[in-house]
Image (cartoon, rainbow, N blue to C red; front, side):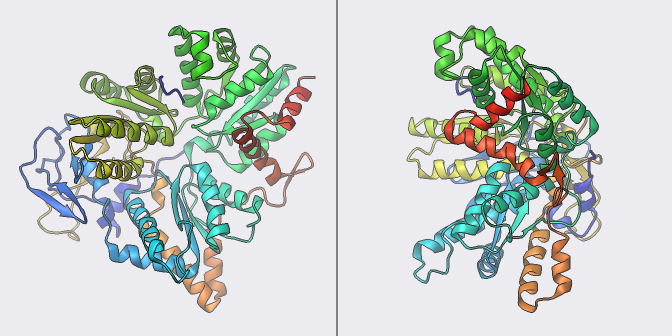
Length: 577
């Protein structure tokens, strides 16, 4: 990116009243009002310290966004939502050791998306770290060389699963994400010779995705058919976060290439340059916000009057002002698709960012609504923000913290986290490593969650928790976990259908199944397999799974060669005849 530039599940509320209350509820000693300074001493948890916060009544509104302050030796959550996020960053080591032993013994790998539950991410990070520590002193050859746990974006999850199979000889994969991710991981394994390696989901239930499902209806198909009906060159650029069925259907209608939020800009720039910006129509979908934000980004380049030389240097060597204008004008964005998490950054959140956090770096995923994106885009033009993927956001924060540490500065860097709150685990780990390795100890990083006051709620104690807790706070509202129609959606309710108990249950089932060969257990495990809507089917005479993976293959080829493949170009030109 520019370096200078369904149905909501009220899951957390339900969990707070159920048997998993320990995970979802946070003690009343956590503050709701961030501006009230803590008078409590630091509490140690593991090797880090957490600040205790004063209590607040359930009706009290937060006067500022919740945040986590990361120092060289401290982690200080500010506000109840942040405390909920931070409470699981240091997991119990006995549980970590137990789970690692089982993964090694049973030859099981775990691939998880960045947006997992914070408790689960804390455990997974610790397992990976412990495995790598043991590997350093291993002389027996029992410790696998490639990590058995990987936390990544949806594309790299498949790559990591392949590496686990090829290098660490795992015999099954647990995929923690939504259903299209497990489906994609299974397909990528099959394409790389591991079709017999089962991929298990955390639950037998359907784990949906509002964005992916917006491309599975008749409206999206009609939009594609309309785009393909003309005699001009057309390329469908489809977001990776869609089902294999969507990719297969798209490929049968119009030449299609997959993209990620990290490479989408370079994808459309290269396609336009290679096939002519005046001739090629880019059809981007299904993520409406991302598509509109791409158009806004190109418009910002034009309105900022970037010179042709700067465009060639910072964007693409074969583009200039005229070609960027043609690309922008020839980009057609699907109008009815968005992610429920990023959709919920409302106006009240945007106003608070603009009015109260003018000194903060602003990060925004390409999927966030226009207002939030515009703030980050404007700041990115002067390197005070970043717009892009989860990886782009993480890299930007790492770079800023590292630069300040190397300069020996004494300051607190503030970062507005314009994406799902689950990313905070990866950010905390990375920032800790940078600060711990630096000789300068004057730098802190504050990760700010831009959520409204409705993104936290009080719940009644059912008696199962400590009697000293008069109030519990969960990061959610009655209508959906972490989401508020008044503004702010901190966590994805679908991703949170993956939890620690479910992972432990799957590992135990794999263990029992391998030891006694029970058909009943295997049948239970089979219910955790990814959806297989395309198995054995053909579309226009072609194997549906091959057709569904074709856009991913085109993207892989582009990532390696930095140009559109000859076969894709040939399809585009043939359709225009």
